[in-house]
Length: 274
Image 1 (cartoon, rainbow, N blue to C red):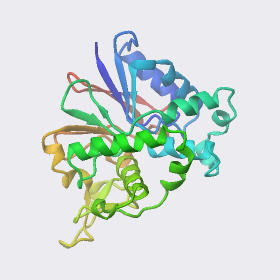
Image 2: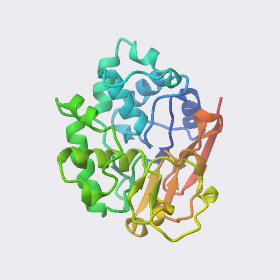
Image 3: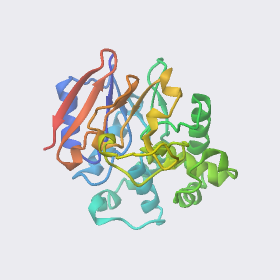
Image 4: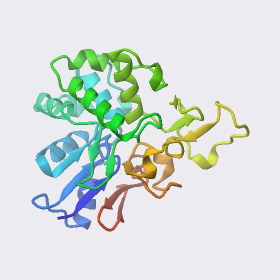
């Protein structure tokens, strides 16, 4: 058995299938971990969801920000964006089953039996591993409940961006969603920042102040003892300064390539955008 991990698919179904053919992926014995953002912007989100769902227990998924936004659109909370190319999916005969399945997926996955984890954006530097696991469970229980739409409605917003300030269940839920699916940079005081999407090499920090932006993984003590796989940050292009970190979003939907990591030997496979 081999464990494979793939970055943000975002509806790039043909690239995904080609990549799995490269490694002779066999769903009877192998496992595929998907680092979130299965849908949006690419040409075939419907086929992507149907395929990943068909893998059943062989697929291990975490939700990304685009997946959560799709659930909100389906619920009528948000309007569909033309650039997300989701109309075919939303009009599909099996959309109800697909959305119910998607809403059951977690925000955090342990990779096999290793001291290694996958989430879409990373782990908040304000959390221990135990706190991250607890908050992922807290959020998943609410997203998969009969009150799902109310929780989806409450996830939008950027405050609180500091975990100690999250006092109510809604505030804790919103912070958890943002940390697991939207975070890239944090301020030096570890508060979450949501605007900057560029690579760390382009950030010009000239002062040692709380306005200084640092990648979340430079502030997290958890990853010194734990390996972490994530997507979401295409401008990293699979490169990171920390040895325990594996960024897998390489911007296939923007014309770059889709990346697959074989876990046991850390070999990387790529499929150029079609």
